[in-house]
Image (tube, rainbow, N blue to C red; front, side, top):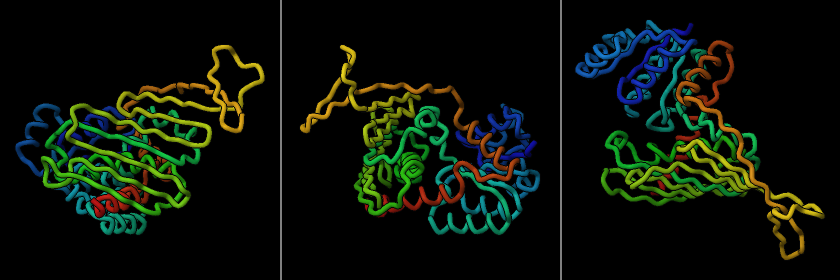
Length: 319
């Protein structure tokens, strides 16, 4: 089993601790958090082993999950990598692209594996249609959340929109050509609502909206491609595929038929791919365990996390 520890025991850190404890691939060694009061409460409630320093925890582990505030990601990940231990870093990978690139070089030098916690890659609704999304040419995504003080240390782009940026980059096989954006700070010192238009070299356009001051939650994306429309509801874990195919000579009386100006008829077909229930955070941890055990490339490696951060920074720079 892989000996695992957690740096940072806030809301998300506690989730990682719980899931590592449940996993059959990991042996939970313990955690370290800089807040003594929080540490004592966690030990008392859950019985996890608390370490007295970052280095003490790292020394006892084979793999460390970094769930600290974003400003501490680089320092913590650097310590893990230089100790020769594998590292799982919650998104975003780092505070700057330069930091992220340095982590990639360090990981290569020390021959360790790194994964970034872009959890929507493991969302069952997205997984159900991932192979169906082929060469999308227009994408629209909305990620809306009610206000929560947790996470406001970074712009909404790094807090929420980066989830959709990473998911989109994983299915659009083309380089980003141009980014334009607008945003507004309402409650926080950084933008709380933002819209971005990302144009790719192959002509694909993605329009993304993220807000953390909404009255209701929404996490939806729509992918439009030749003869197909695919919708993904990340929150409700549902998906739908609408296809258009050449209409048969004698269609069913209930068939939906469209005819264009040239007289070409196409029939609309509705599909609801099966969505398997899962715990996406547990699955990403298990996926990383498989990569460590088999020496394979993690599903969301450090390069993926860095590219998502690079594009997010282009959005932030244009706000």
